[in-house]
Length: 456
Ligand code: PLP
Image (tube, rainbow, N blue to C red; front, side, top):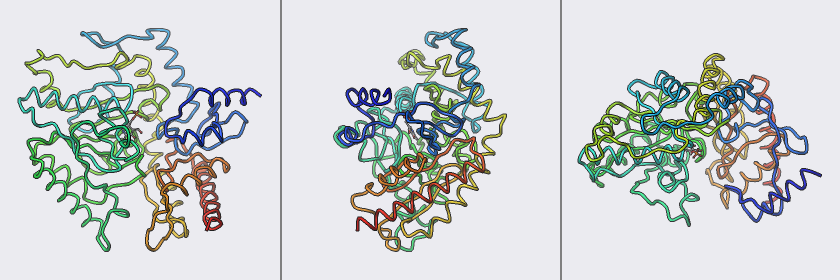
């Protein structure tokens, strides 16, 4: 059949990201053919609820006609232009204006890239360029967190704090210090409250800044709620403390909102949920619902001025991509944000998020479940070998991977970060969708539990 030959062609040619290559040769690809709302259909006609929004990104689901029309209309009018050397075009101007209108106060400038990784690379270069311009060339280091995810290019991959993204890639390749992951369940001490845990991490950050020398630390980057590393909301008081430290030592605070941005947590941005204002904010993914690649960096006038007034380069920021602010991608972004607003999808994420989190909380009593965590329409369910002792499985990820596979059989696409099952459904989910996700997830966890017991 056609799908068989497609599968063979895939096996003959492709190297898949984040896929055990030799295992893939044995089992073959799951070929996704079309999408409809929150569902996708494979080449055999089976349907799945896409409870991961693809890669945490398809806010509007898989069949939003208005995005298709916006892309087509722009393709017909002006399929490509750039913004180098004083050029500009309407979609990127309008989207920039819209983003500044939506952004927290003080973020008045915009720079577009194609991906979150490139956006974080650009942030690093902006910050370095700025500090060179300001005559403080030593101020170059970044503070990040273990288990943080900021992308995979050489520089953004250096900020990422996951061993898989470093080992055998010779990363980190830029000066970065990784601080303790702010996940209370895993990194809190025995008997330590969430608030005390946050205080300890803030003290650790300050000690690190002093040990390294504040004059060498340029920026702190973090996801308001950590996503790809395993869906970890911060402990109470964490962001207040970090923001105060950044102010005290003249360190730029960068919020990586590539997953959090545009409603995921039930607020437009994650930093709003946790009550802090960054100097730089990075968005992508839900910006276009990933119908086209696009990312945007929002930054303050202070950063802009330092770049614009760089006397070494006569105000020229020597950085940009062929597709920076691509007209078709920015036209789709503009329409996507209009739809999120018109349909109050941030409000829907808050309401459906509450239903999702309440439903998941029931799983806390399951013998396989160590912790249930999340905010709005993003959640993680961590599976453990020993519930009382919080003992992880050995090797980490074996049981999570099994649950992920059972998910396919149960018609639910989830993702496993090690043994944490992640959920991140489209912002358009209805009550019925949320209930179906919960029912399928419960079956997946029950079946995984049976499998764990049978394995001994
Ligand atoms: N930053 C965060 C928080 C992300 O979750 C991701 C991707 O998952 C990135 C950056 C990198 O984005 P991209 O995959 O578009 O390069």
